[in-house]
Amino acid sequence: MKNYLIGLCMLGGILTCNAQSEAKFNYFSYQGNDDYYKENPLTAAGDYFNPVIGGWASDPSICRVGDDYWLVTSTFGYFPGVPLYHSRDLVSWEHVGNVLSRPSQLPWLEGLSIDKGGIYAPALSYNPHNQTYYMITTCVMNGGEGGSKNFYVTAKDPRGEWSDPVMLPDVEGIDPSFFFDEDGKAYIVHKSDEHSPVKWSNYRALSIIEFDPQTGKTVGEPVRFREEGVGPEERLERNEGPHIYKINGKYYLLAAEGGTNWVHSEVCYRADSVFGPYRRWSRNPMLTQRLLKTNRNLPVTCAGHADIVQTPTGEWYAVFLGCRPWNEGEDHLGRETYLMPVKWSADGFPYITQCLDTVSIKGNIPSLTGIQNSDQAGNFTWRDDFNASTLSPEWMSLWGDPAKWYRCGDGLRLKYADLDSKSGRTPACVLRRMQHHKFIAETEVEPAAQSAGSAGLLMVKNEQRQMFLAVEGDRVVLYRLGKKKDNQLIASDEIGKVSGPIGLKVESKGKTYDFSYLLPGGDWRILAEDVPAEHIATQRGGFTGSTIGLYATSATL
Picture 1: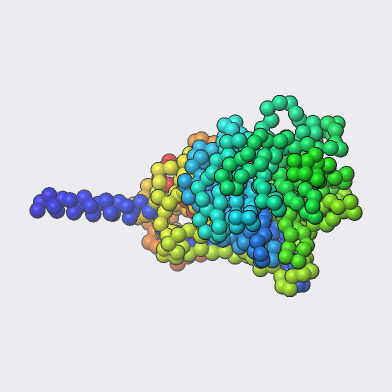
Picture 2: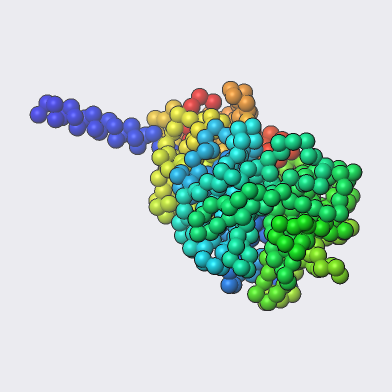
């Protein structure tokens, strides 16, 4: 009996310890407050805001099956990988799931750079000959220094589970994309590895290889993309992000060119055979904003990396990435997804902009009977009370699946894991994209009664640039988290022993942030005001925008 009682006491201690090791978040809310959207509301039928998917949503790829449009974007070092969006009208997008949602589909992220490694440029396609969706992509290891892994996954229903990865050892480089021809044959076009000094040659570093859908493997040797009509004197950055289409019996190849900064562009080629030779359009680029003045009002920059789709009634539209710079680059949005109609030149080439054409923040599709209705564009309010047993698809974590650190239902409970958010290993955090220059993000946290850890709102650019507003023991703190142990305590308020939940709030004013907290029965108090946004700005490098969410840790900060 004595041993039995001791066992009960030990079990009770374990249960108590487990209960005390969790922080409970009652909700998370996000409200966009950008001035442009408030001052220029959508009013006419067919109106829509650009970007159609705001915030970091880079490298969009689109396909249509029937009346359904499906779109995916890059995720780099975040898990789950490759968000899946759905629309019926091209402008109102819903985040319905994630293609790489299981650890077995994405086992390579641990230790990679959040915003330079991981999943690059996913391409989504539908093969009508076997009624199968394909998503093909590259996992770049250590920013490219550790090589890359090209693979694809498949699904009969894009909303359902996708297969485990099928590796493509004969497809080198990055940015692969499928093309399914009318005769049932299939091909993969991709940016090749650069084994020789071919920069500024008309090789352009692309390759095309045949693919057998029945065996799921490539066939034969890759054929280098052959281009006519351009010489090395143009000294253009090599192509990437290629897609092939067959339109009216001709093969068209679209590719990004010029790198990912302000000179980014999209170019078009045409051929009589899938392997070419391809002739470059004489009026390329078919999309760019690099010719425009940098000081123009509400500029969209870096436009490129396009994919085109045809509507059921025959019109063509393009999705592509672009940026809305703010405060000389000190913004947190990254590269976003835009939509514009595709026009056709007199000599039969598609284009989106020419000369001084601008990418507007507001557009109109005359054939639409309504206006855009989406929680991905314009100002919107998004809230999660965590009542479901699983996380909403918008939530991501760093380097892997955080399932062992959280539980949902009647709020979100995060364990105080002994891992920090810069470690290269998956911490106890869930994050979502920032989608506005100006926004308010808010939560309510109930810390563990005897926790020695910190729990609150985390803002992330990468593993070296983060900010953390948290309840830590008897105080509320704001940290600027930097390289390794280079963390700074920006502000701190003693709050004593508090019974009940504590509110935490971040307000982005575009160039700066305000950080506040709310004690039970009280009013909001400013902890730190006008904190510069530069620490987590997209100008600080990498390919992602910034994210914000919930985080608990017992690691020393």
